Amino acid sequence: MNYSDSKFPWVHIETFGFEHGVPETVIGCLLVDLRGVDLDDPASTAELAGRDGKDSDVVQHVMASRMAFTRIEQIVGQAKALLDLNARTNFTLRVLIGDGTGRTRAVVVGDAVAEVLAARGIPTEVQHHHLGIDTPK
Image 1 (tube, rainbow, N blue to C red):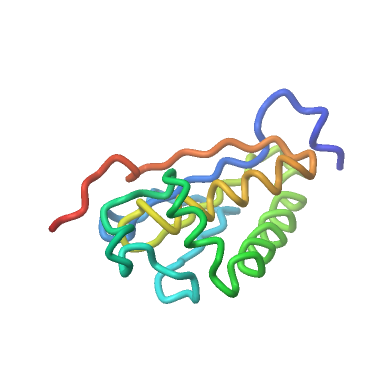
Image 2 (cartoon, rainbow, N blue to C red):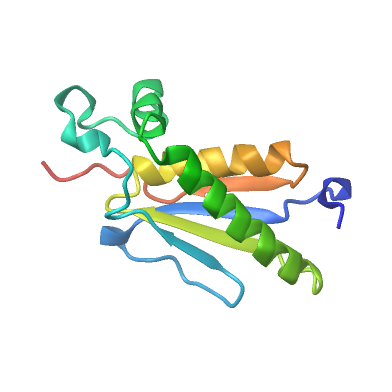
């Protein structure tokens, strides 16, 4: 299917923090849990603590993780497979990507997945549920 002919997004990516709860899900939704995944956590580095996934240093830190591109490609592949299934009935695919707080790795990975999908001609939008929520000190 040629998704690029569409004027509306076929994929809606939502990032969130599990400590705040999982957004309501529906059938055909892809849930990605980044807790415990082999992506470097910026919160464990003193100079990055308190920054979020929109900060370029945080993005570089997460993307420098040994498995970052592999994980992103896995998510893109899973999303594409579900999208092809959902497209038969004109359902938009929701991809929920969560980490502990929803402020760092989930944001970086969500934006990266959206960028890859868009580059492949699949209209995508991103919503960051917990980006602006401060983490407890």
